Image (cartoon, rainbow, N blue to C red; front, top):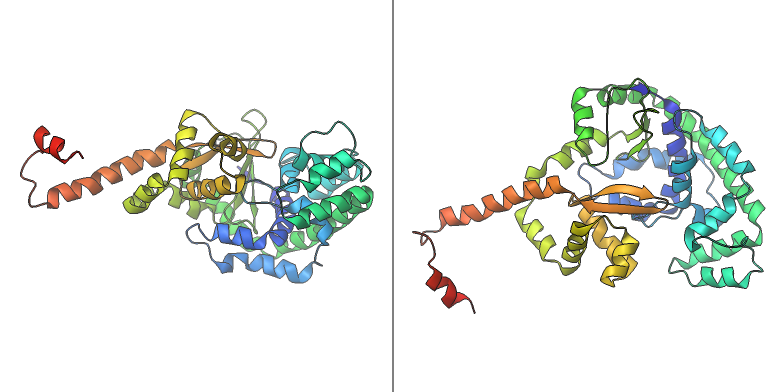
Amino acid sequence: MKYDSRMGIAYDTIFYGVLYFNFDRLKENYQKYPDISDEDFHLFYQLKEQISAPPPELYPFFYSDVSKPSFISNHFFYHFRFGQEDFAAFLARIETDSSFMQALIEYYLGQLDEAPTLENKKIVQKILQLDLDPLIIIQMLKCLADIEAIKHTLLSFLEKSFSAVKELHEQNKARIQKYSKVFQTDIFLKGLSSMGPFQCTESKKDRFSICLLNVIVILQKGTHETGRKFIFGYKTPHQIENKNAYFKISPIELCEALGNPIKSSILMQLQKKELTATQLSEILIFSRQTVNRHLLWLFCNWLIIISKRNGPEIYYKINPKFFAAAKKILYQYAESFEINCDDNKGEISDETVEKTNC
């Protein structure tokens, strides 16, 4: 694979805003992963000193509850031309996109039959009924009041962020070159291919890039025919090693997870088919927030993986590799009691089972 710096710089520009507006949530989430510490945010802190604080009006563009990407991240994923353009070209297309601001509102409300305005009481009422941080609701109403001005503010912030991020990548050029060598090794590529939906081939059209702010991200776009495009966080190799090291699973933690009624219910539903957090919330009659919290735990501990994305919705499925490893671990755990039990001279009779079956 060949290296393309444009993708990583573009991703970091977007992610800087996401991290700025959701820092506490994201930091708490990332520190659940092995080998992640406060030191991994030092480049974000560095940028924060260089870039003027974004105005609160931009919060709806960057808001993420961790289980669902922000609007701007989702727009980037589906509209950025990976391997074909730089971030400046992407911004130029947003500037001329007359549907961009309506797409923001629809990201939260669903498809609208008419243009969103502050005068439209039906749309205003829908925004007020959203189960979200009140600050987001306030800022969305401000967007309706002056859509073009807010769009200009967003573009101005992203342009300034782009300049600072581009300089950051230049300052860390030697570091990026060092990581690039790792991402092109056979060991890394085989590890990547073993992880869920990620597919690595030896196509000459494949490209990869490195981002510095989201240290554990793995993003894939494209097909074998068009060439796959990857963006890797610089700690991705460590995460692949940890994800494949299922022998580290604690049998006690696994039993606690399977014994939790909500986690167990989620896993039972995902056994049947791939589902989103929204669908699970409707099926199980739990709040979206509750489902998100348990989904996040299951995902961070490898019991489930992402199968696909459809717009803002993320579909999850059971990770069979985890349960194959877990089966062995639980068997060994149970066997250790059988071996160590002094009273275990033979098999338990059917009579004993019947008498103790209260």
